[in-house]
Amino acid sequence: MTAEIISFGEPLFEFNQVKEYSGEGPDYLSGFGGDASNFACCAARQGANVAILTHLGDDVFGNKFIDLWEKEGVKTHLVERNPIAPTGIYFISHDEQGHHFSFARKGSAASQVTPDQLPADAIRAAKLFHVTAITQAISTSSCDSVFKGIEIAKEGDTLTSFDTNLRLKLWDLNRARGIIHETARLVDFIMPSVDEAEVLTGLSDPDKICDFYLNLGSKNVILKLGKEGAMYATASERKRVAGNPVEAVDATGAGDCFSGSFFTNVVAGKSLEDSLKYANAAAALTTQGYGAVAPIPTRDQVEAFMQDRSI
Image 1: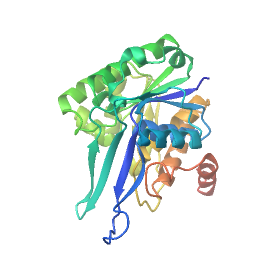
Image 2 (image 1 turned 45 degrees about the vertical axis):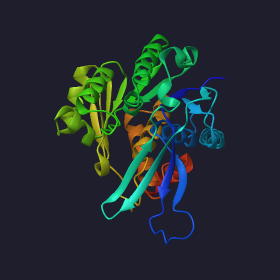
Image 3 (image 1 turned 60 degrees about the horizontal axis):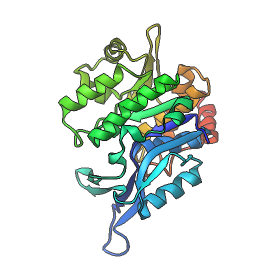
Image 4 (image 1 turned 180 degrees about the vertical axis):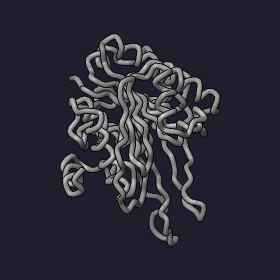
């Protein structure tokens, strides 16, 4: 069994506090999160041949993820179950200041992955190996596994993509900056948001941010500009693509939807510009529903949206 795209990282089972809790009924609603899983689900809904690479606890939350991925068409043959360590979970609470995240992921099964456990043949056979900085932040062994995965991918001429998803609750800025910049030297695609890049580089101008990562060694910079859209930059060209204004209700997972949509199209042979236009549309659509997975659009929905707006 092979997959064209492999998404490596930690899934997290979600408990989201009901905003209008009346004191009766459930206080929290369950769902699915974790950037690697969100990415894989989005890619699958766009028609990609995608697998999730992770370790889960041998518990009810791990079972729910297996059920989710099988329903979504995400291949699970690279998933290992750990009989001792749990599947990570997190809680979202709400107050007048906004929403707040509390994590129960320390010692999770996914955080205990080691480099020698990576499926080297599967990575070499894939067209794209996707990782994020969150996977590097959750443990030293997981961080080492990301670097090993990139090394294996290069052996098979597998493209590598890296989302800088910056979570300073997981690690301090100096360590994050050093590891993210070192990873940037090695990958074919780096995908920061402009807000993250400003924290990591001290730069705010999008063109200067792109120059920074190109000079580090990234072959392609895909810079997310929020409501302004996105841009790409290579050594020979760069272009901005406008965003798509919508009535957004929840941006949870929008960045992962953008990434999954973008790389599905890149692997299918689409140009960087066309892939960005599609990813912008998909990300806009996913903000119109609640949660990370449920509102992810299908390819038919994205294409209808693009046709309606003449994108």
